[in-house]
Length: 296
Image 1 (cartoon, rainbow, N blue to C red):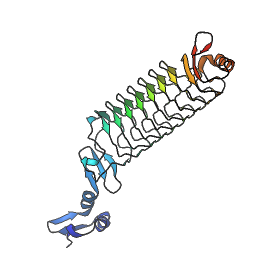
Image 2 (cartoon, one colour; image 1 turned 90 degrees about the vertical axis):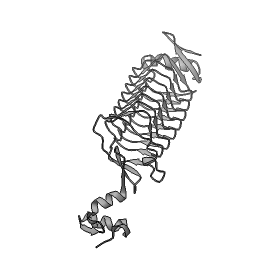
Image 3 (spheres, rainbow, N blue to C red; image 1 turned 135 degrees about the horizontal axis):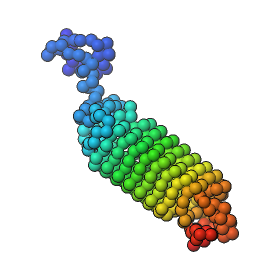
């Protein structure tokens, strides 16, 4: 007879993997169940791994609409911070209210595909968003990740943002990261420096695009995009081939002596390149008047 109250977790897990049934003071028990109880916590919505500080399973059916608890710490316990989401368990969920997970460090590939967020999305420690992590997702409230530094390939493919996209420490946006996305609120990334190829192709911006430290825009980065709000990038230094080809906007703020590729400024690229050069390639705002770009 083994006293299960006074043996190590490792020992119980070793026996549990072999499917051993033993007797304790209360009778016969399954060691797999004991090991699960020791290692995991559940709250009716998801399953938390205390060893990896990760949520590893969601108990909700696809398209469930539900208000999540604050998952900064699982079950509100400071001893169990939620650092990671494994197995892409939160896909196809409709999150009502604010989504808060302020100890999460990385959004892994596919984590929130086809999800909806009615409130604020808040993850204060996230630094990286992986492949297709938010593909086809919708955000009604603000997307607030103040320490996000890099957005990976296809991360927000075909997503919609009705609230502001606020990531003041975002520095790099990868290839096709926001392809076919829509921004009704402002896109505000104060430290963004580089936008990859096709990153915002076929996207729509109703609010302002405010990236005052953006320096490099890759080939076709904003191809066929639409800008109703202001495009404000006063330190832009290099604009790739076709970067804004077929895009629509009539005001651009740009840095001095920028390198401009062919067809880089939408329908009036040749006029912009000529007018920008004629004005000594000065930094500032240029406004399209129907025939020329006028320096302001």
